[in-house]
Length: 69
Ligand SMILES: [Cu+2]
Image 1 (cartoon, rainbow, N blue to C red):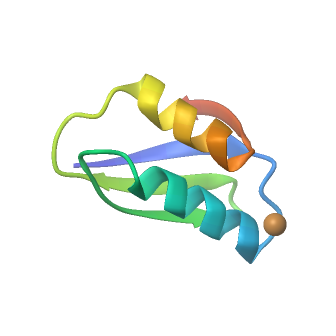
Image 2 (cartoon, rainbow, N blue to C red; image 1 turned 45 degrees about the horizontal axis):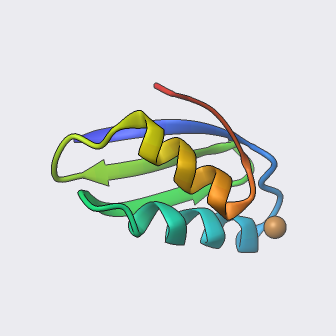
Image 3 (cartoon, rainbow, N blue to C red; image 1 turned 90 degrees about the vertical axis):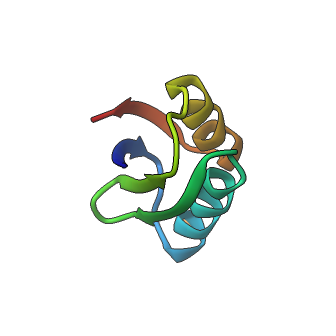
């Protein structure tokens, strides 16, 4: 399943990479792609992942988690 996370604060490729790396550390996340221009990340998951874990990963990367849609 795929979920889109709305994120504030990413401004360049490095930001995208930080976010991608943190999201991909989560158990159950197969892959993640972050887009600074759109202010979002799309996460592909193999199982249900708690929203709190997505939020923690975004914050760990250094950006502001807004919501998962
Ligand atoms: Cu950046």
